[in-house]
Length: 191
Image (cartoon, rainbow, N blue to C red; front, side):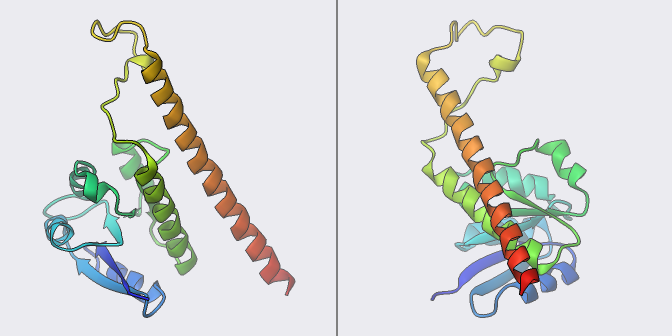
């Protein structure tokens, strides 16, 4: 099997080495970047199977790198794990539930790392199945009417329902994954 290219963008050498060591040997070709600028340059030069992005980085923050990734449809399809020691730093910029990436809190162990990677890959597959993204008005939560929109059209309602279905499916998949992990854990303890 061909190895998967993984990019780890983190300013801490220990974290980059830890990720490299925790991934199953032979399956992954790990490239490293120590700041956001270096990471973004690598993202533009190489084709990655997975990006692991620290949220606090020198030169260009993880938030800025994330925005660059999200602005380009071909990069948005790459599974993404955002890492941080403080989840609130991420939720200040990006509200939960995280639909485009998986969050991995620091410090983490191998089981958490693998779980985050699997979840990020599932989310990326769901993004690929969506129709071409269309700018969505956020007027449904606003009391200010939009004169250009008028009444909600059936197309907008269908799109909103489809988005809710995708969110619910992602939650169902996450719950299935958690249940499988619990069952595996119980089986291991019974042995």
